[in-house]
Every structure is written in structure tokens, then in C-alpha cells.
Length: 175
Image 1 (cartoon, helix red, strand yellow):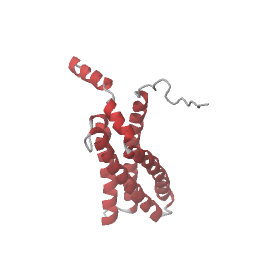
Image 2 (cartoon, helix red, strand yellow; image 1 turned 60 degrees about the horizontal axis):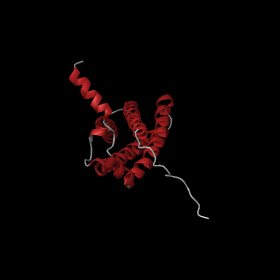
Image 3 (spheres, rainbow, N blue to C red; image 1 turned 120 degrees about the vertical axis):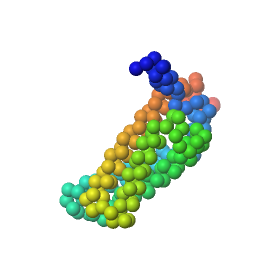
Image 4 (tube, rainbow, N blue to C red; image 1 turned 120 degrees about the horizontal axis):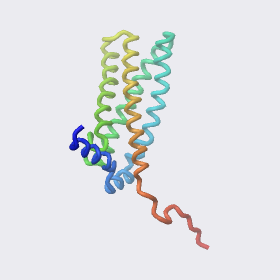
């Protein structure tokens, strides 16, 4: 590794996830709450759907429930991606690929591509039922990685949060 790439890596590692202005916009944006609600809802849909897909592959039971659960998961994904792009525009000034979330957004494109491929295959009948379920599992595998990327960034954001101001959060009762 040359010294130039080492310096670049150190600079990237030292760069905060948010500037103070971006942090203010993030905290003031209603899209932050929307993302905070949609993420666990999508994960819950994912969990139920994963169970149904694996159950179908194992037993052959509940085919329609498995198929449509993946459709529901894909719709949840599209919703969180659209609202996330709006959030990114509000906070960072661009709809996707802001420096702080560049690689998460790149990987999100793979997640969306696989989920969309599932819908295309479902509605064109281009895959067998089992192949369709394996495509869903591939999409889910990438989703889990991507969710992990975002959870890591959430943790990083919390760790770099500025310390609370003295007296902040103190509750004084007037007598």
C-alpha cells in the first residue's frame, strides 16, 4: 500500500458522517422519523416472508403466501428506498450516493435489482416456483447485508454525536 492511499483512508476514516448542518437537517426532518418507522416494519415483513419462503422450499406448503409475502417485502423495500432518497436529498442535498452513504446506496441498487428481478420473473412466469424462491433468498441475502451496512452507520452516527450540553435534559420544577 502506498502512502497516498494510506492518507486517503485515514482522511475518510476521520471524516464525520454528518456536518453540524447536516445533523441539524437530519434531526429536523420528518423523513428521519419515517425511515425510523419503515426500517423495522420492513424487517418484520422480511422475517415473516423469509419463514414462508423457507417453509415452502422445505415442505411445498403455503406457496401463494410465500410468493405474495415477497411481493409485500419488495413493496416495503421500494417505499423505504424512495423515502430514503428524499431523506438523503433533505440532509445531504442529493437523492442518492451522498458521500456518507455512498457504498450503502451502491449495494442498495443490487438489493433493488434482485427484488425487481423477482417481480419480473413472477409476472412473466420465466422461473419455476423453486427458482423463484431461490431468487427471493438471493434478494434477502443482499438485503441482510445492506441492512447491516445501515445499522453500522446508525451506530457510527450515535458514537460521533456531540456530547449533550450541560443542563440539557435536566428537568427543573419551579416552586
